Length: 136
Image (cartoon, rainbow, N blue to C red):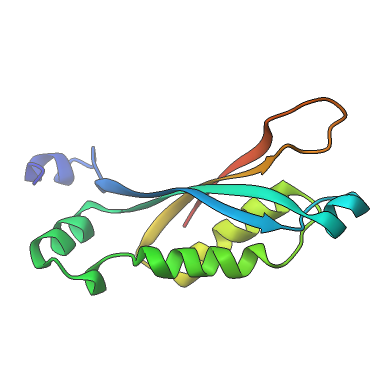
């Protein structure tokens, strides 16, 4: 626990913890080009959810899923949203971030990376990605 004088002086307003989910893989149909919409491609989503430290402490003390952010619920939301094609990774990253904040009140911020694997850019390319951070 933080010393009370730090909180009173306003030096520290909240202590945050991060819940990370990395490497979610999807076959999806995002992209500008007709071939991307028809054939689809592999996408990878990495996300980091900032929550208040006391929530993590309570979840750990109680060992109770109801006290924290349920990873399965997060991945269900991401999976559902990945099924709705978007032209741009930017649109996808922003939309996913907003949906996560809307669905999980305990989450204070979302940092997400949406990667398109082997995109059609004219030369060999492992991935392109957009990384986006949205604060509540």
